[in-house]
Length: 117
Image (cartoon, rainbow, N blue to C red; front, side, top):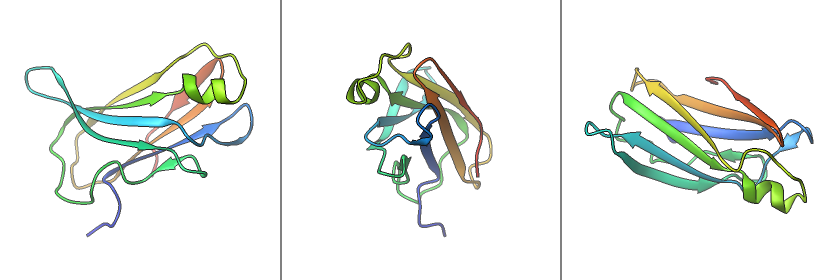
């Protein structure tokens, strides 16, 4: 049994080359009626990570999930103008037995993501 959330994330501020600490993160799941259900919330730590969005068990069902990053406040705290006030990453959780790591590589005027390990 794993001791971490089945879905984790981290943010790297690529413009500064360091983790983005203090970013509010929300995890949601799309219900069968297409509404979004909030499952967990967290704030990135000094290493830019949120590892406790969910408890390690029980296993999540397959479906569409969304990680929402409230990045406007982060950039304001850096004294930096930015283009994106928030970033949402939607993904299909197809294998509930696997760990899903959703990293965000962030700069004031762009972002990218991938499925991490």
